[in-house]
Length: 387
Image (cartoon, rainbow, N blue to C red; front, side, top):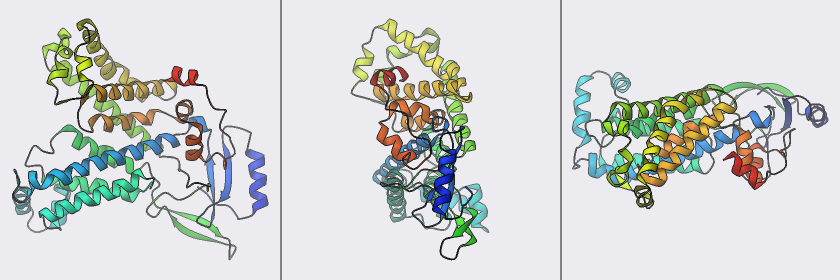
């Protein structure tokens, strides 16, 4: 964002001039932090502000569950007297890099190069992660918090490498998703602002540790636009996850070719859900067709997420909906919830305007402050058709 003199008449005039013309409009308003910032407000239907808002909070929920599980289990699993103590593995990798902890860190990333690997510190890491993830869920959009969550999680995953406890695919997937999500937030940058008291221009470091407030509202702060590169990296992650899962099935057992896998999947999966019983007793013909649907979603329709516009939007809906279906039929920890996150990068705000209540999109966009208002609330029929 560039910056503007703090002159109210000029702000009002610019808003009147740009409010209804073109796809882009500029809105200048007084920030609750003091200086005036100019925000580029693009056509609301083509922005991804709502997607960013949901993705970051959903990631915070996944981190919360991951660290809560770690707090309840890590000491018993990888603690000093655990099933597979991590301390012995940490001693082994220390012996490989006796002269430089930093060198060892880049080879095996963990903060335990500098912090003693004790049961107390394992619990402290988990508690710290629970607190930070709670702040993210409650609405603190901060690159620093997401970076710390990623680093703490990476530290635990690294020292647990000697066991199979952290070897499931969703652990590495959480690390990659969490790393990309850092760049959905504002990163620190230098901007020139006008000081209202001295009426002079000064350079200031913005987004020092969290997103700057761009537009004030009566109920909170606004959400700045996510990085386009980060959104495409999320889509690429979604593409890789789905394609990999589909190829594993095709190359795996003959039951996928015979279309019989789902005849017994729901009674042999790790932890059945309350609805697994209903899925299991569906007619065999339906379950066989469901195998075709599975392969179609993961190997064919996944290409749609790499296409911009409405095609990508439909692809994101298919991928996210498929994950919700798996959540209903079984329990794979937070794997499916985590996989929904990159799929949401396909859903621009045109989709959310049909799905979410108007007050929620208004809160996220702060449309009472921007130049382009929200359309009238959509009917239930339109929303169901879009879903």
